Length: 256
Ligand code: NDP
Image 1 (cartoon, protein in one colour):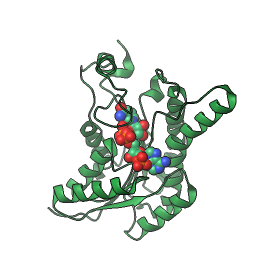
Image 2 (cartoon, helix red, strand yellow; image 1 turned 120 degrees about the vertical axis):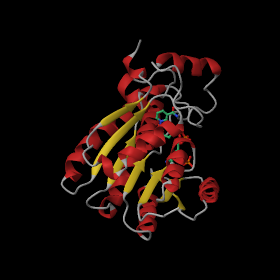
Image 3 (spheres, protein in one colour; image 1 turned 90 degrees about the vertical axis):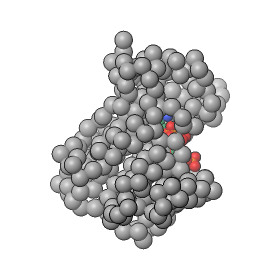
Image 4 (cartoon, protein in one colour; image 1 turned 180 degrees about the vertical axis):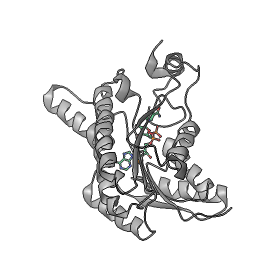
């Protein structure tokens, strides 16, 4: 396999959707930085992807992306690998610690979800802004169908949907800002994607059946569906695609 000179950065790249995206970039000959808080998990994921494709191309970088100092440290380490051709802001989480009662607990819960799903992407993107390849760079946010439909079903669903929707408004402005440099900025908003940890085991057969019933295609999405879409958005062929919110949800946002 030929190793390209492209460098991709995938936040949350050690697990679930992010891991599949990282694997897919690596399999196509890119070098990939994966970022997350769990050091051992990052190391294992990098080793396993490297082994699967038979080359050392995945670089684990640990950071809590809600912490500006850790984000800057991560950006400095990434700079040692070269300019960043593709940035996928995939880190996020749905379920916060119990909100408890009262407005103070509500405020803490909302701040946690905004930090995790919005500020992570804002900090990492801004830390890497000067390191993005010009022209040709790609910035992609992983949002959620919850941002388009509204969230329901858990105490944090509202704040999760709101945080993801905020990514949309920010990304559109960033697309305007970076267009002149030949950098595209897009948002991919997946519907229910099976086989990830984000639901913390709450995705029971009934939950999954309800999610499938929401779709027009009669099946859940997979991390591979997301990786395939990212592969196109990140490609050189997609240079005319920018400032878009792209749903990937089996038709679920249309409703029946
Ligand atoms: P996972 O829980 O497997 O992935 C979330 C990743 O984000 C983990 O690798 C986690 O790593 C990382 N992460 C979370 N918080 C931080 C932080 N503060 N700093 C650094 N990394 C962080 O779930 P998914 O793969 O399902 O989720 C990936 C993305 O896809 C999320 O943004 C999610 O909102 C979105 N999404 C998922 C859908 C689904 O149905 N699965 C549907 C729509 C959108 P660590 O804990 O080690 O830090």
